Image 1 (spheres, rainbow, N blue to C red):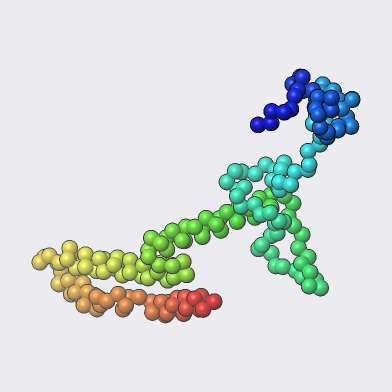
Image 2 (image 1 turned 180 degrees about the vertical axis):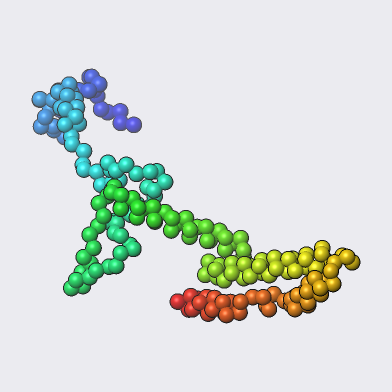
Length: 205
């Protein structure tokens, strides 16, 4: 702590007469007035103009759930064909806050929500997002097979009393004998292999 400085008042600037050595000289020492300085600073602060806002959402009425999906740059209509003239993009950006602009922001949100939902569903099924569509198709095939098997078995077991007409019973038994207890025989192989080929092509890409 400096003990050799001497002050007569709390806000008085030190002068050379109080010290045995040279101290820095203030050119405003003779005209210094704390009250004037306080009023000057207060007026400068009141007159200071804030910088223009750089927030792209400033003055735009937009729902809170859409704000995280607003890009920093301009928004274009992604579903329209991109027109290039002399190697330049001739698309015009949408006006911020317009109906088309809000529609594109909602599209961004739906795409993000679908991506998150696919990731969660893939994690639940123990697969990846790229294999999710194939896994879902196989699940649908298996479900359809189980429903058909239940229908065939149910008709045979519940409608096979001794008093059933012989012709009806023979038709049911013939239908059941033709029904193969095999999921592969029910599955649409063409569709399955087409899905597998599409999936392999997706993995290569």
